[in-house]
Image (cartoon, rainbow over all chains, first blue to last red; front, side, top):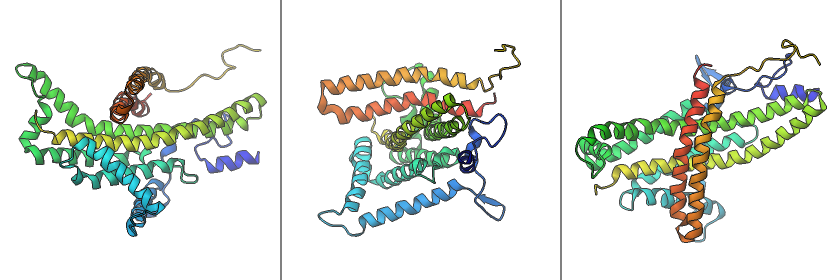
Length: 273
Length: 79
C-alpha cells in the first residue's frame, strides 16, 4: 500500500483514495498549478521549461562553436551535424541555393527549440512537453506565417505575392472564381492552423497516452486483484514501448515543423513558370 | 452472478472518442499507402531515397493532419 501512496503523491492526476479508485487522465492533467507568483501572474512549469530550453540551446551552440578546430572535437561535431542537417537537407533543398542562407538562422533556432522542448516529455522528473500546451505553439506558427508571407511579399511585391499564392499558373477563365478563394483559404488561412494543431496534437496525445499507461497501470497493480495486476504489468510494458514511439514522434515533429516552414518559404519565393 | 442492471457500473465517457477512433481509419490507410509507395520506389531506385524521403514524410504529415485536428477537436468540443 505504501507503493500506491507514493505513486499518487507523484502523479496528482491519478485517483486518490476514492472508492471508485481510478480517474482517467484528461485535458485537466495538463493544467499544472503555478510554481510561484510574480504579483498576480502565476508562473507555471512549462514557462520555466521554455526559458530553460533557451538557456540550454544557447549554452550548447556557444560551447560547440567556441573552439573551432580543423579536426572537430565531439561537441563541435555534434553541433555541426545538426547545423548541417538543417542547412543542407531542410533549407537548401527546399528554398533553393539563391536565398536559403537568409533563412537558415531562423530554421536552425526553430528546429533546436522544438526539439529540446519536445524531448522534455521523456526526460525523468521533467516529463512535460512544453508544446503540449497550445498557447506555446501558436506564436511559433504565427512567426512562421509572418516570415513566409513576408518573404513572398519581398520577392513579388504585396499584390504580386497574393497573385502568386492564389492563382495557379496555367489556369484561366471562370474556373478562377472557384480556385482563387480555395487557394487563398488553403495557402494563407489554414497553414498556420494546421502547423499549430499538428505539433500541439502530437505532443498532447503522446503525453496523455503516457499518463494513461502509467497511472492506469499503477491503479490496476494496486487494485488487489491478481488478474488485474497482470494487466497492470502489461500496461507498464506498453507504456515503455509508447515512450520509444514518442521519442521518434518528438524528433519527427521538430523535423516536420521545420520542413514545412522551409517548404512554405521556398514556395513563396519560387519564380513563376 | 446477479445480472441486474444496477449491479454493474455504467460505461461513462464522451462519444467524441468514438469519432476519434473512426477518424483514425482514413489517415491510417492513407499513411500505409504512402509508405508502401515510398518503399517500392526505394526498392526500384535506391539512389533516389533522399529525394523520396522528404516527399514521403510530407505526404505522411498531410495525411496525419486530419487525425490530429480531430484529436484537438475531440477534447475541445463538449460531450
